[in-house]
Length: 240
Image 1: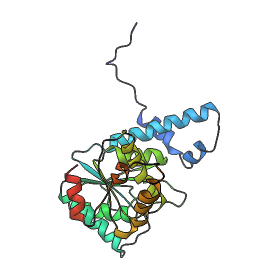
Image 2 (image 1 turned 90 degrees about the vertical axis):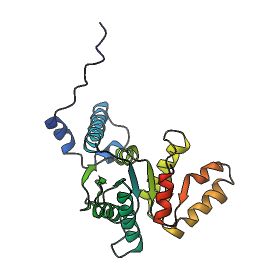
Image 3 (image 1 turned 135 degrees about the vertical axis):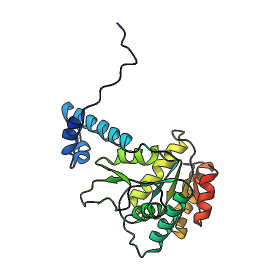
Image 4 (image 1 turned 180 degrees about the horizontal axis):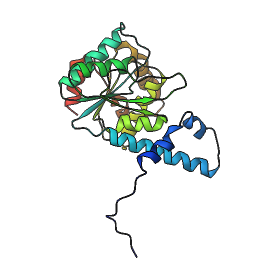
């Protein structure tokens, strides 16, 4: 007998979800530690599902969303912090939900600007060995154990991405989006760099080395749009 396709999938109850997600400290590290027994891997798969489910249920909102990437290390008195704060404010005033990685630095600044402008401010925080606390300017946030799930959530809801100065994590997030666009897995949503000369060397490497060696095409160099001002960034986003 064929199964009725209208029968809903049963979700784990709240108590079951809580029990499976309660002790997740170092769960990603354990999962990536090498070959394990099948039961341990299946338990990890269930945790992946529950992290995704919690994210989907928490980020049910109206309106277009822009994700802002950037370093956690910039303090309030740094020009990049103020630029991200002004950006978050302008995005919210233009009707965009602002999403970040939920931590300090650029993330805090963008969320802060959005909150100050009366917009919706979201964060996808990550548990780290050196604990990263969610910043205080979030209307909603989820704390993830697994980096790859967090990256999916940062990409899934957004129609544009602004990349501020940052380190390896910021570059990882930016290149993840660019790779998805390049391979046709993601619509060609704009990826916008801000921060002036910070990106000059990277652009030169892409144009003078990667393109020259034939590992990317001429069109690929144009995936990142440079925006010298917040107004320019907003114009790129509106034209998407």
